[in-house]
Length: 256
Length: 334
Image (cartoon, rainbow over all chains, first blue to last red):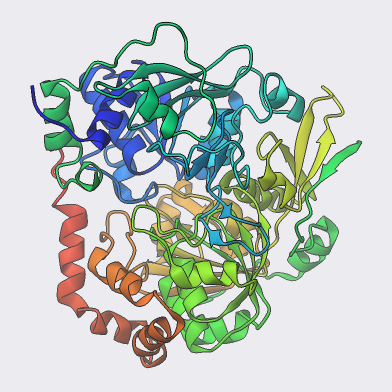
């Protein structure tokens, strides 16, 4: 079995949860790599969309920007941001696939500020399309490394909606019913969301990762079902395709 | 309609459609040449305090020559729609040109990193900031393009992004569901780089249009730079390809490689080396000011900037990267 790093593991596990024939809007970096890998391994009919307007490209290599020319290279449609966002709003996009700086137990994401909004300690880029995609796509997938600074009881700023304050809160706010966070893939485990409370629930731990290590890397209580299976490690085939075809220049996987 | 919640952010542009109609009524619809120079277009159409909308997507099909000229002419107190803005925002921030921002995405440079100078504008309170999202700003342009004061949508709801926006939550008069009312955004000036335009301002764009069709219809004035100025017969041969028609446009300038150091689809890829040089300089005010002095203020025009960055040889290499280093079958499985 080939050795792998945690970024490769996150990308491989995230890729496995994207179904063939579904539509996904991806951000640059790990989310895009996961979608490209899924397309080549388990979901050849996965339709990748980029918020700037590119749809169904034969991605020759990892885009640097979600609006660069690779995002519609040999694509089916070179549209507009409004068209992509409106497809999401119509209910035609299954997955939003995002990264994030800070996340809370309900899957609310912060990518705007650390500290007070008006005089922030650190200004981050802002929502971009993340709020839109997580508001409108059916399921929101997230990839992010797990530590107690990122997994916090309350985010400094809710840039992008998860389940907000719990069950029913999205619908009360006016977000489309039936939408919300689906999975968070971290470097330690795969997390889902409890149906009753809408709080994070551990679904799988990564090989060799203990419950204690996960608890120590989380700033709040995670729900632990009685039986938590261990994720299957990346296969040789997944790793080969990820390294040779998806990210040959190691822009993403080389950084781990 | 009931108002249930209102963001605390400032509205930087008047959403009144009748004020906009009075303006648009005065715009020429004649077929007349609008060909000018970058210098004259910026001098005549961009004033201190103007609110700008920038086309493209951060480092993709951005109107770099116009952004540089704004810095060169020392425009100040500009407002900007931080709509998918990355290097475009970095230029205006480094040039000391802006004092307010409707932000969906600024400061960030996507996978490349962050602009420290842009970031400091937010952290020191030098900017007035109102939060939005990418879709919200695209739809705000669309509302303006439609000549209506707001457009309802289902984003931002329930979040701090809404709380720090200037949006209002209303109840739908038909279904009763909560909706965000996004105010029309009429920028004073749109700056857009396209592949081809004729002298009247009929524009063709290859590939994704991002939000440029909406932006061109929303802005009071539109400045177009194009890779190539073409005869109107070329426009008339393919009228379906006109993304921005002439009656929206105030100025047309041919600027080959006008999206450099960004990517222009089918023309040239982004110059990652030069963008890294920007990032390396973008660490403190002194360093970025020296960089901007050398690359923008000390160059007479965009042509001199291109020469400074490696000239034709470099541009041809980027052209090769865009056109040939992406073999059709590499990395794709049937």
